[in-house]
Amino acid sequence: MPAGRPPSNGGRAVASRAPRIHVAADFRIGGDVVLPEGPARHVARVLRLGPGASLILFDGAGREARAVLVEAGRKQVVAHVEALVPGQSESPLAVHLGQAIAKGDRMDYAIQKAVELGVAAITPLHTEHGDVRLKGDRAAKRLAHWQAVAASACEQCGRAVVPRVHPPAGLDDWLSARHETLRLVLHPGTAGALERGEVPAAVALLIGPEGGLAEPEVEAAQAAGFAPLGLGPRILRTETAPVVALSLLQHRFGDL
Image (cartoon, rainbow, N blue to C red; front, side):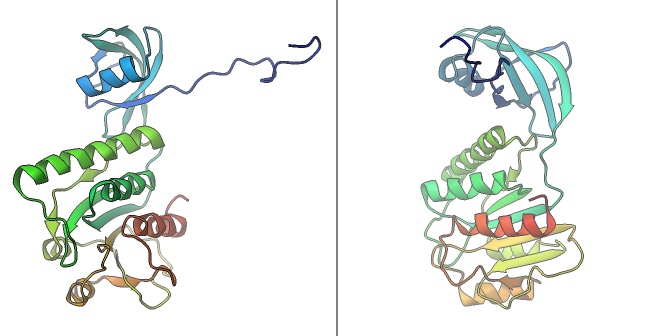
């Protein structure tokens, strides 16, 4: 560095951001947490962290732990809990997303972005025009995968509560269980679906498949108290629609 030129950071040490790792454990100050196989591999082999490295652990139910690695070997990765703090990134608006099941990465994207935008729960839905049908072991494997996608999104976005991804359901069953104050179905409709004065206690948001909901499905949703919500003149993909709708809801009633 040429003489007389100040350091680019103004002479201050720059602390790297501690990685956030989801571990469903009972954190105790002064206690040690043995990381499960997946998080342990990520910490030791992907991030290549060693003893003394800082971590933020979160239990998925709202608590975070500031921790330091004390062991990072091939057989075991252990973190020592130094402090406990409540999570700070939950939205005040509880949204239950009913998302028609999409193929592969599209469903992953929809779940990931919904979690980043503060969704409280997600139910994958079988619909008439949907081209994915899940049963038995295949459904269980996809559900476990989607729940892992939700947890990973929480690690990235700073949430300490991992939203539950419910088992795939039929649309009629999901509609019959909805009691949220505000219920919306994405469908070309009248303007003003979000122009209510009071902030709803909870919201149910229904998004159809790539081919859209069948007309009888829209009618069933409206009969269950769902108001149609349009998102402008362009047709959005099923994985893009929740991003736009949740952004509007969070801006209108939540914390955006």
